[in-house]
Image 1 (cartoon, rainbow over the protein chains, first blue to last red):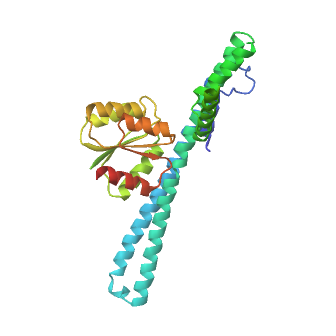
Image 2: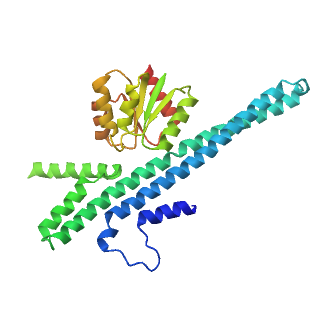
Image 3: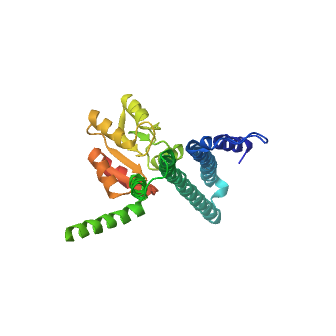
Length: 181
Length: 118
């Protein structure tokens, strides 16, 4: 990570220079965390694209090498059976490198998937933030109100799929119980 | 064949473009959200759409609904991390022709594209 990235992260995190007065608690709230996560996402996307650039370059170089080898194969001096066989092996290994480069590019999908997971975390952080503001803003709530807020946090989130399946099972069980009652 | 790719992740657009070029599709236009996708579509010539779901400005579902309002026949493939059954059904009801969950393999994408194009 270079200095500009560190600066971007620090800026997003709202870091203060040494000796500065500490920020008020309200300024260090939800927006700061979200900006920080956004900065992390932006940095990882940029770095992933740099890796993709390098992979593209390798792919182009292998392509160029393959082209040169094809030309060499046609030269009169390269018509010996053993030489032709060696060249074919080089071509095959070049193809293998090319395939691995493409595979590595496909694996870069992890960046987008991670980004979306981070966005899901931000969503939940927002809800926790709202919950706390609600609690502090109106004083300590009674147990029924707390339970109600807690339920709404649980129900409105962008729930991961594994939990969705779990939620379905819970709903099904709940409905079965209701029918029995 | 001109293909429109709508995804807010530049990495993902690049991966899809890469896969498409490997299977012979090189005429590609890109958009980073649904709104931009509609603009590109309005410029004409697009024969197939590959779109993400979760995007800023206009998400994939709204984008698909808008597209279907103008063009009921253009093949649309949704490529997304949303993997729940109800999401898939919702996308199909909005007008998506086929659905791929990320992460995908090039073979899966190829198969879906070829099945859409007949």
